[in-house]
Length: 235
Image (cartoon, rainbow, N blue to C red; front, top):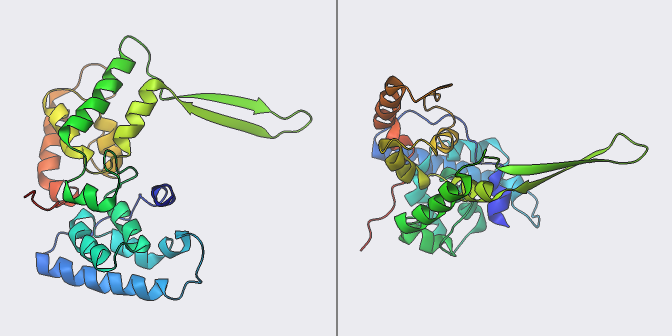
C-alpha cells in the first residue's frame, strides 16, 4: 500500500528559506521536472520505492507543504499518478487518509475535520486515564540453540489512539495547538515529531514551565507557514 511505502520517507531535509510565492512556484517546477527526469531513468518495478529514494525527490519534498496545491494540480492532471500521490503524502507527512477514502476527497475537504480528531483524541484520553501509559506491548522470544531474537510489538488501546492521531500528519497540528492553548499538552510530542523536532523541547519534570509555553507559542507564530497545509477553501 502506498501509504505504508511512504511512511519511512516522511523525514525530510530542512526546508528552504521562505520565498515569495513566485519563487516557490519556480523552485517547485524546476525540482519537479528534475525528479520526473530521474524517475524516467528508473527501471519499471512493481512498487514505487526506487522512485522516491533519490536526491531529486528529497529536494522536492524539502519545499514543504506549501507545494501541496501544486502537487495536487499535477496529480489531477495526471489522473491519479501514483508517484505524484507519494509526493503529496510526503510533504503532508500523511500516513492515513481517515476518515476519507481517497486523496481527492481528503484534499477537497481539507483533511480530517474537528469531529473526527476530537473523537480519536477522546479515545486516547479515556484509554490513558488512571494508568501508566504504554503505547505498545513487546514480546521477545529466543530461538532454541541460537542467538536469534524475535520481537513482536502490539499496540495497546492508548497506543492505537495515539498512532491514529500521529498518522494524520500535518493536519493534526492545528487541533493539537488548540489543545495546547487550553493547557492540554498531551499531543506535544506529536507536534515535535511532525516539525522535525524543531519545536522547543518540552519540560523535563514537574508542572509545565510558563516560559516554555510562551516560547512554543512564539516559535509557532514565527514558523507556522512552514507547517500549515494550504488547503483549498471549502465552497
